[in-house]
Length: 198
Image 1 (cartoon, rainbow, N blue to C red):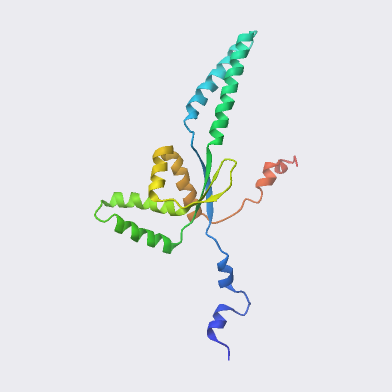
Image 2 (image 1 turned 60 degrees about the vertical axis):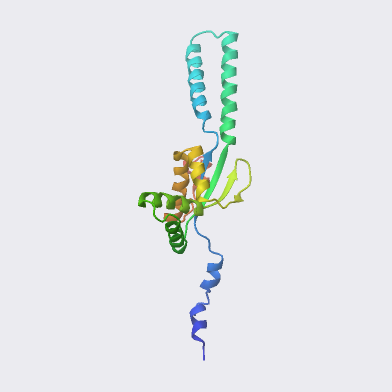
């Protein structure tokens, strides 16, 4: 006689769903944030200066001094671009399961007992985002697993700005809500094959 539990775990197809689930992972997304977003203002100013120099030089003979000044501006612009790019941090987020979200809400409500509902909900957002952030990768570095507290997420928002942290939140929302899919044509488009150049 066949055991009922065995039939449920190993159907007639022979496919073991329990074994398949052991290697399953929640969807992930990533986004980039920048430590040195402050250089954007100077980059904008330098760009305007460089454009003015080019416009002034159009149709007029350039002096050696003008050429040196333009070269200095271009060099400074290039340095700041490298500073900005080097401050990049890729943040990886993952979807959270319903049980994780429920447990997080219960803990958050106990922790914030007696506080206004708006404040409890705001704190819950930090809790969920901190649970969702699973790894970081610095510019030209390796992906490193992390475990952030809600306080660290709040501190990061206050340090690098709400707009950049909104991008992290958007990455979490994508991981949480978007059906996982891979853009199979990405490399073909990048190489120009779709345009008949490949």
